[in-house]
Length: 178
Image (cartoon, rainbow, N blue to C red; front, top):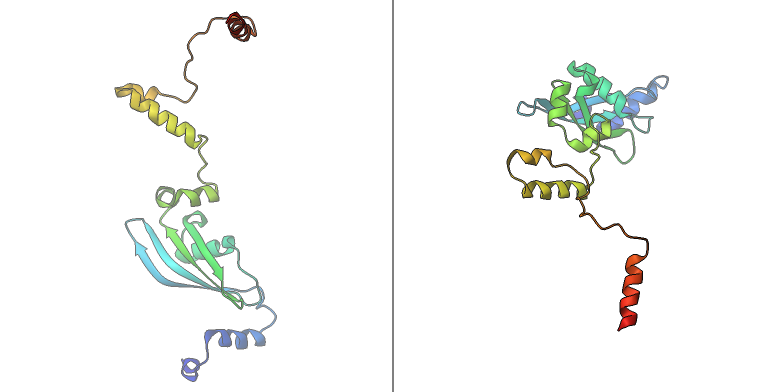
């Protein structure tokens, strides 16, 4: 509080403190959680995370998720970190975090893109065109048959078996007759 009255900022305080203790300060980092909000509808806690890491470029998300999991007494899989930016000048990073109640709620409420990125959910094998085709075919069918509609080529009408080049020769002959 005295330092605040004197008008010194947090960075200056950190620089003074860490310059005195040079032996361990390069590996240490501190995590502060601001604006912690309990979101009961989505079964999670939301917060802004400030990380002080003087002497390091950044702190990996794995390390941060372990530290937050220990702090909130959850598993590492329940912690979601995103949107981290290192502040100009280095030594600090800001980002956002969600701490879900359990892993099932994370699978239920977290965004699909983030789940795919973490390897929890796999990307679908169908292309956009294939999904559209199935949807159109389902519209053409009534009732319970909609579930039986699958991906694949439409059945082609049976063509008469003919020797190779038959049509070409046929059209060629037709033109000659004229």
